[in-house]
Image 1 (cartoon, rainbow over the protein chains, first blue to last red):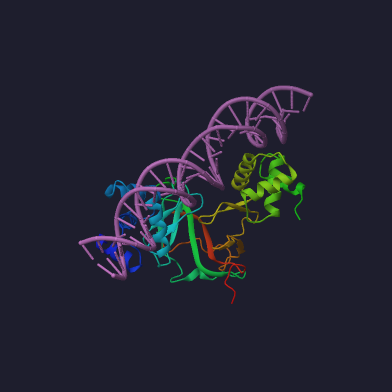
Image 2: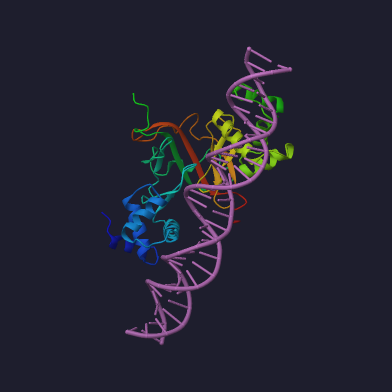
Length: 141
Length: 141
DNA sequence: CCGTAATCTTGACTGGTTCCAGAAACTGAG
DNA sequence: CTCAGTTTCTGGAACCAGTCAAGATTACGG
């Protein structure tokens, strides 16, 4: 149950200015996990009818950079945002309808951070996407 | 050292028509692993100067659907293609310059196909992307 | 060699995202 | 509280990978 005052504090703690659009965007992301930008714009305009799409794009980018929200963009799909951050969870994506569900990491804390051979790269994150069909799109048994 | 005749056979074996653009595209993907569409268009036009970008897009989609090439599209980057298929390998992507390297799966054959909780999805593939900095982009020690 | 159906060419177009310049709002100092 | 300085927001236009559509061309089985 995050309230606006909690969102305001999150912004302040992240050393970000507390503006109406940012609070509304942060609130919308918490209320609609895995929503795409368009849906977030709609949700934000439910409160602040006059915000520009640009303000929402800017806010999302700022919040993502600050680590308050996480951007998710599976191949070929538009960007989506979620509020679960820092817990190393992954996603299951439906090939048919694009629905996204959270999946906790099977191996525990930070399992997948090591590739068999890192090819000299300094790896800082492992992202796992499971592809399949959601219950609604699966051929009925 | 795959030759054109080998590519022709691959197309035929996949029940696809053997056309000049397709052979050239297949050849280009083999010659330039992880190349994006634009680079493939350039490579193809080195042989067939008159091919349209549309023909390349169509060929890439057809070849991908037939499993002869694999499409890779990390978040926020343009689509790339590679010729290694069916061996369950993953990718390491540089956050700075977008370079991509192959990474063999740490766990072996088909390791990651099971999430801790599949949420009712019928999962058929697990895609892993390691994010980091390539040797060229790492801050020199 | 022919007919049919798939494929290619040309050119315009889409949709998500970003860029730009000016107006407005927020913050800290006085 | 007020002002100046900085950041953010608005509105509109631009951008780019990728897609769509109609007609010409090509591959392949018979």
